Length: 135
Image (cartoon, rainbow, N blue to C red):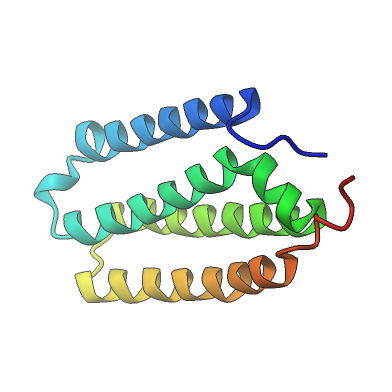
C-alpha cells in the first residue's frame, strides 16, 4: 500500500536530496573551483540532471512504487545509482586529468542515453502494475 501525497518519507528523501545537492555544489565551487575550468557549464548541466533524477526518484518513492510496483521501482533506483556512480567517477577523473570538453560531453551524453534506455522502459512497463496489487 502506498499513501497518496507528500509523506514523511518523501520529506526525509527531499531533505537528503537537497543535502546531497549542497554537498556536490560545495565540492564543485569551493573544492574543485570548477568555475575556472573549461568543463564548468557541461559539468554543471549533467550534475543538475543527475541530482534532479535523484530528487524525483527519492522524493516520489511512495507514489512511484505505488504506481509501478516495488520491483520496477527497485530497478529504477538501481539504474539511477549506477548512473550516478558512472557520472561522478568520471567527473572526478576529468577534474584531475586533461579531458577535452567535447569528450566530456560525449561521454556524459552516452551515459545519459544508456540510463534513459534502461529507465524509460522500466517506467513504461511498470506503469499501472502497482494498481492491481493495491486494495
